[in-house]
Length: 190
Length: 162
Image: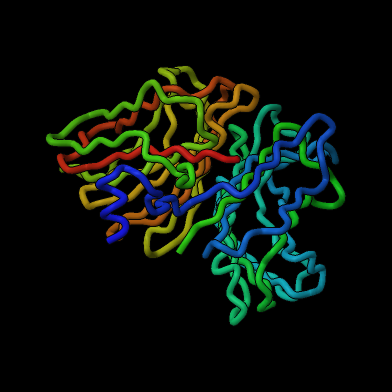
């Protein structure tokens, strides 16, 4: 009734319809960075999604199989597991690991690959606020270098029923993400 | 005030009759990523789902593929292509979702991620590279051989980050 009255008078606030919201964004500046942190994540969404382009700044890696290492709530214990499916241009492969100290989105280029190429990654963390479940992640990540590169699927498990309130993304082996790498965190309502 | 829109439909095309191409042009640079969602079919059989950015027909595109056809998984690649090969069109319905990442920045080459599903034939994912630092303002969708059937739909979304 109140909404009808408000509509007649052209006043009032209509229902919020946006179900996919930007939470935070990091654009890596000059000099690069080894770590990206999303903290104080609001509890008002159902799922989270990170959309990123990334490249390593240093380390001399010559392939596109470098990683965005992922930890939730700063947990560095052996509480993660991961399974991966990869296509490297010549064949498909798969592997899996349990009792890991992190999850990862594999498939970004090292710094000794073709300049200006940044890998792409989409990371979904499902039902992140649910305190009755361990947390599930899925990723699609890849880089094509016009003659090399790979596309990777992965699924990840964080063996914790805690609500996710922080996500840390780091480059592998103490390396750094290059300038112009871009990480955006979104919340999806359910 | 209602929340600003983050995942915004930019344009949509539903084919009233068979067509060879669909074009999205004058794409604003105000988003971070683009997502192209296509539901397609043709009257003939296996064909390529192709994209061209900004009318670039130079040998500036490449792809790495991963697919499963119901009996095996495989991977392949193509280099120095004149068009972006990101999937297939079949005589049965296919869904193709192309994530065009950071499309409007003028610093990096452009990388796309594609997932494609056709229940009768395959499931696939591709990563593509367009070796250009130009912002993407036009997307031309086409095939190698056969027209898209009437009823095929193509929707372009923009995702804006904070």
